[in-house]
Amino acid sequence: MVSWSTIQTLLFTLGPLLIPKLISYYRQIRTQAQTSPVPVRPVPAYVSHALNILFVAAVLAALSTLPFFSPENLWSLTSSRLQTPTDVLYTRLASLRPENVLTDFDHSLRTRLASIDGRCLYFTYGPSTLANCPFCSSDDPSSFFYYALPDILFPHILNLFAIGLATSSAISGKEGGRWRTIATLLGSVAAIVDVSLFHTHDWKANARVARAQDLQFFYWQMRTARGLAIALIDAGLAGLLWASSTNRLFVIPVSSAERLEDVTKIMEATRGKLGAVGIVRNVTVRDESLRKRGEAYWRKEGEIMGEVMDEKEVVDGIRGALESGRVSITTIEEEARKYAEGIIGHPDAAPVG
Image (cartoon, rainbow, N blue to C red; front, side, top):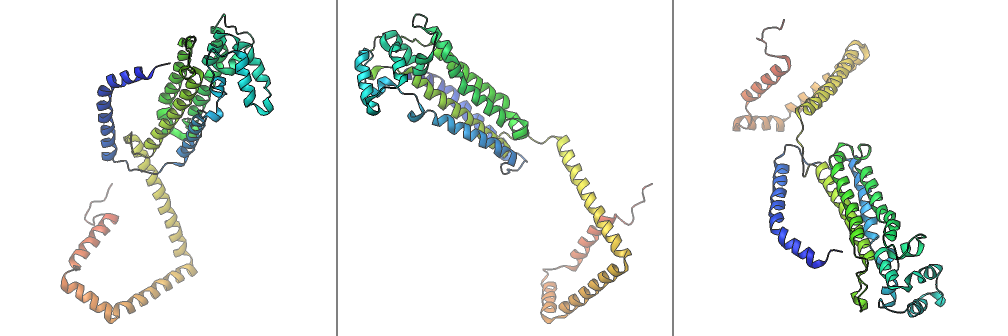
């Protein structure tokens, strides 16, 4: 497994080069989002389904790293050294079991843990592989790797399925499709790195360790790293999907064709509404009872408004507005003329055709 000193060296070497570029890239994206004509919007309903899938996947991956969900580590449980005799190890283990009775799984491990090689393989591939593999032998350590391979890949396959589901057009539409390739590549790279670390790990790394606190529990370390990596990938994808779907970051300007299509749809809808209004008006005018009711309404409306305009407070208010210059009759007439010309056209305009 990669040591912490190696990680520190990489951070100190690459950090000064990558961090300024990342900050510059973030500022560029932020500026584009702020100057974009596309307004910020709430999360679309269909994208929220994808975010829920990714949230559940990330939470499950993070929970899998907790000790409660991890297989037992006999050496951590009994605080034993690598060289502790098998009888002593199992005596300590039995004292921790209910009624001091070992389980069938404990007995199946016992023969494999009798040798140092078996114990080293236990630290590398975990208890399940060591106990259940029918064809594995410490003389052929790679056989344990091949048996453990499906268990190593299974969480990654589930995660790729969750990513594919969340970014499918049926769930998240075109918003998820933008990140589908990147997310799939990241999930695949995580799986490849996981398998490579197991394949290249020195399974005899603990053979010369004398103290219990110096033992390297590779299987459990990789299990934790795997869950955290999957959770980070899913959380990062959810963040990208949220930012792009709400137009906060990674905004793609609307193309001319899409804008023209939207305007055409709006015009068609408006035309349909105007046609419906014309039909209603035509029916109202042609029907004698409806026409009389309409005339009665407007006649009553005129009488009411006339009474309101004749009241002393209204007259004084209109006179005060005209005398103070707050209201200009000339301006109102000019605006009304422009509005009417905009609807019916200029009266002096030559007829078409």
